[in-house]
Length: 343
Image 1 (tube, helix red, strand yellow):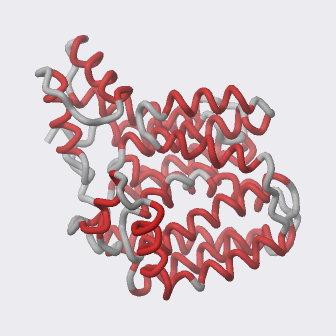
Image 2: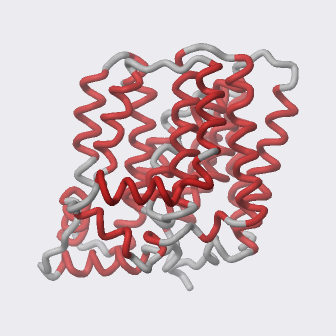
């Protein structure tokens, strides 16, 4: 388990060197420190065996009900003589590439630190979704912010052939063009979202009995698997700490910032919070919450670009809180022990 703090530490160190020099090999070293363990992992991640079976089904011509883009990746790798491990390496490389290629050089180390503590663990578990999350952030930075809206919608539509969440970003990005949250609105929505905690079950009942009744998603309500149950990692001190971290991320934007990217950051974080609250009652909502994890990058850039004299104190509190949360999960067995294909 010590591999995680080691690779995180070296990756952040190299990222810091890249942020403060013009030596691009530090950027590559930072990337490799996270990519190589992800590429060579073996049976690490809840869905590892399931995806391995999908590769075998594809290789043997057995029909699989899944997005065709991901099946095509498996088919191409098989036809080229590769194994499922090549699929893992390709997905890991693509996920890290789209994220790292979108981090601004000036704040590269901050983004890599957040990627390590918040994003990285999910790349081991939800291969397809995290690739699309990373790609959505890439589209947001390189296309959406440059007002290339239609191109971003087209590419996100293509990404939905790997994971259907690609369609979700088209809706959210279209809404961002028209919706701007000022500081006061963001604060009120955050406080209001906390009132969802005791009423989450009633809201979920409404969603499934009225909005999703008769659809294929209705099945989640009766599931006995984690998708249909409350999220286990959301109880006790971990849950309290996570909501404190949410508050710390939102606070400086609500107090000091009132520009477009700060508004986007507030919206992304509010989506994370609201669906995280619903996940306390039904785990499947945690997938929607994870879909907006790239919002952390938007927010951290807004924070470090701010002029508050308490900025360094806030950043320290955020990184300490995220580290405690990550390593607490690791000690509790939430983060799986690391194994490689080499034994």
